[in-house]
Image 1: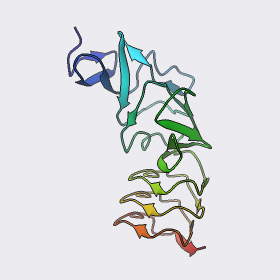
Image 2 (image 1 turned 30 degrees about the vertical axis):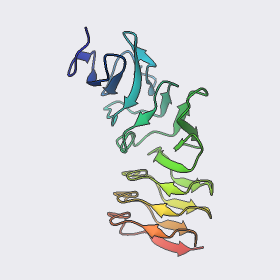
Image 3 (image 1 turned 120 degrees about the vertical axis):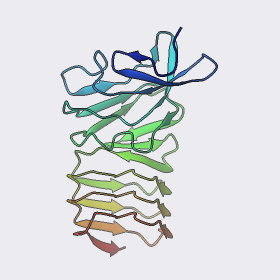
Length: 193
């Protein structure tokens, strides 16, 4: 029987919900991370559906992340340590998540959850109302961000440690920028649009 704390390769079971689901943390996980630079999160492990994925770290450069339809929740800092990531794919049947242009969203695209760390420029669509905590955290290559009209909230630590960030276009629709949202972005210029 599977138990909390058990490792399956390098995939750690960090929680069980009535024995019906596992919550997983991945770290350099063969066979889920082949040498191709792609991580494919499994839909299930030993018959237990993977519902949540914690922060992913890797010593192997990762450019692509695939999330199955079983995943309903991801950690705030899910992809913050994957600085070469440029592509995020969410299974079409996933009822909670979606992806587009290297960004991970809620299914309705009202919440921006995470941004691939290998991107240099990002335009966040106006359908997004809230940019989650740590969404851009440690996107070390990111130089420019354009936030389209419609975005209302930029959560705490959202752009933390984006050292290369030079230009951020913020629309008038933004009414809340939480503390330390741009901590470590000392060279960024902000433009109200």
